[in-house]
Length: 306
Ligand code: SAH
Image (cartoon, rainbow, N blue to C red; front, side, top):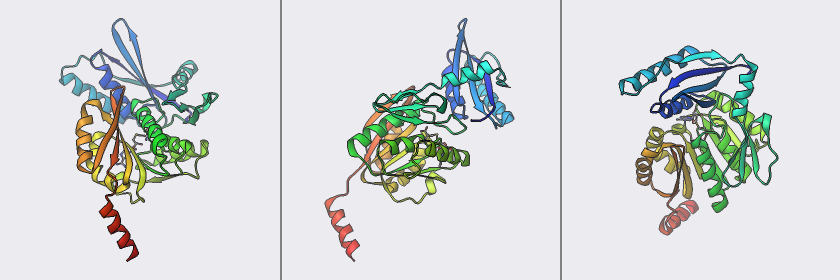
């Protein structure tokens, strides 16, 4: 557990609250709570120490200024302070309740692991890495992974941008035998390693520091990438190299309005859209790479023999 937490408080109007909330999540908030009083909302976002408070403050100011220029009503500047009151620290913890996801999973923090009741408990420490299961993108990817594992039982997977390791760990618990997890943030890799150990799946999940666009992993039957749409546009060709023919690709972190565009780009790289789910404004797309054609298969066999 980090031993200190910060809270950023900012008043927000109805039209700006959603954008601001998403922005605070993107900045690495562990949780964002919206409190309403008298028609105005106050957002409270929680960050773990160490946290670069000056940069955080500057980025939120910059975002608020840009919203104001676009004509949104904002009611005041952000304020950042430590959470000193024990009561608040407990209230923050209470925000992370066990969350059932899909049909078979439940994601829980270490201080509140529920009895399984037939579900697989995935224990994730809310730390500095993204991925507690409480964000629509993560929950959408978990549901997609669960559905694909149930249908195809892939033995191998790659998790690009693993964050807390949550998707790789869930894949392992669901039965995927070997998962290669990568993140370009050393804090995320450290968190993913700790969480993998906590869930006893170190023998199945390999976590490495690296850039998704540069990794040279063996192609897998399932590739998961909960990144942002811009990254999917850039990485589409790389996905085609990492997913085995006939294998699945799960793309998350896509705003609903961007989903068609991302699916079109993936189609150009050889993927067919199989399903899409939207949660809290974020779309997760399930795609499948075309199976190898018979003539290609024959050519590959001849090549192998040569
Ligand atoms: N998979 C987790 C975390 C998603 S957040 C979940 O679903 O909740 C995205 C993560 O991807 C972050 O940890 C970020 O550090 C990492 N990331 C972003 N761009 C990346 C890139 N180009 N290469 C590797 N990791 C990247």
